[in-house]
Image (cartoon, rainbow, N blue to C red):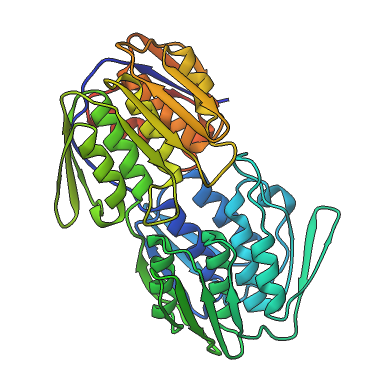
Amino acid sequence: MSKIVIEGGYPLCGVIDIQGAKNSILPILAAAYLADGDCVIDNCPDISDTHAAIEILRALGSTVTIHGNTVYINSDYACGFEIPDKLMRKMRSSIMFLGAILGKKKRALVSFPGGCELGPRPIDIHISALSKMGVTIREEFGYLDCECKNIKGTVLDLSFPSVGATENIMLAAVKADGVTVINNAAKEPEIEDLQNFLVKMGGKISGAGSGRIIIQGVPKLTGTRHSVIPDRIVTATYICAVAATGGNALLKKAEASHLGTLLSFLRESGCEINTYDDAIQVSCDSLKGGHTVRTMPFPGFATDAQAVCMAMMCKARGSTVFIETIFESRFKQVGELLRMGAKITTEGRVAVTEGVKKLYGTTVEAGDLRGGASLVVAGLSAEGTTVIDNAEHIYRGYENIEKNLSDLGAKITSEK
């Protein structure tokens, strides 16, 4: 079991670069399975979820080479349609490969995905959409056995703007017969990034970033080169860490336009934020509560940023209300923050954080990716030493987190 050890109380100051987006690289890697020829992906984050996706590609028969943050993929001779159960269990986003495999092989055999336990995150929307596109899906013994003669374009009205379902449909539809229209599509920047990659490959897709995406199926996709967008949740995490410690930092290779709602909340909470074309400057002398945060699909407040913002506000003046509308079990960090001296009460999907003067370092446990990141933020602002067990959850989404924070002046080490 890996650990992160933090000696808190040091303001974070300096300059760091933001990594590529975890939630972009995973569907993009799946999309590369559809291409004829070489795909080159730049700004690929070096995180465990990326490596899990690469393992899946290799299991399907793709050739994958990694040089730093650039990944080279060739799927010309890939003929696999089954993902081993042990790989599916490594992350929930593994279900993303379903649409890509069906688009290439017209047959897919996958088990239900693993990853963070955030309460029900059903894939019913994925299954319903693919069924309407002509895919026969049999569920038995924990597996999805999917098959079709041809994927057919159709009009799909999503009951919820699911990011995963939107991406899976795009991957299945890009080589389908006819036109597919996704109504109530997810609008996240990562959807636009996937569209841009598929268009470079020869796909005919428009509308990503809006609630209506139109996909005209094409017979062939070719290899291309693409650079992944910055990770907006990693950006949010480092901003919260800087603010919680009363620091001043410049985050380079960041995209402020992907963080509008969050940046508004930070400014209201006492942070000074300056944005540039590819950077964000953040500083904070003191934090103030008195706000209500409600997580919503993009462009609303991201559910993935809720936990790190809660940790930041633990020492703010006044109280902050967090309302979680996306996942049922997204307050797992609360019990661990309480161990550090935070004052938080929860009822259902509502958590109220009342600011305290001090947090105290202790041994805590990361229960999921974003909850683990919130403990890092809390540990940086706490007195004494914080030991975070189960840090492997954090490494699913954060590249070189110890080095980046050390470059900003944190006293942080890892035990892997």
